[in-house]
Image 1 (cartoon, rainbow, N blue to C red):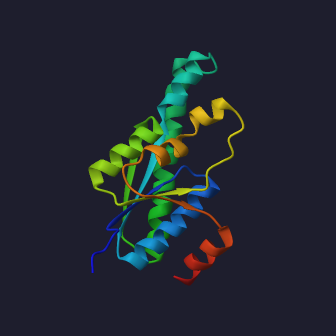
Image 2: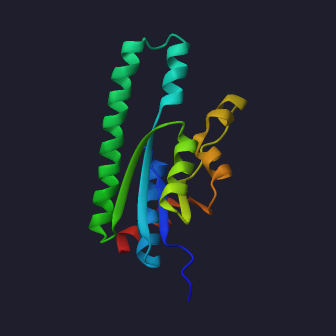
Length: 161
């Protein structure tokens, strides 16, 4: 029988939704015998917008970018520990740039078969819609995309693993 999924990528950003998506991706990777990859993207586009809006000075942007890079390493490390506890091999990726573009680059470079995202936030304005990077990744990903929902169900599956 042909396995439809060999490599799974989960997008992590530190939100509760991405942690839930990570748990589900771990369960799927275990059940399907797939490799699990995780990516955290430091959103430099937002940083540039903050500088243009004079919310940050250039020096503050650099400091904030270092803080975000530190967050990236911490969240990728957290996902790695979660996967290890469940006996699932994990490959972590961090990147900087526009989130949806970096996710798509990772999908192509790593030959990912399935992208797992956390539940999408409600869009309250056109601006929110424009900046909703996970939704843009969902729409533009060159592979199937799974949206992880139902916290209790996923938590039960993860705990039982």
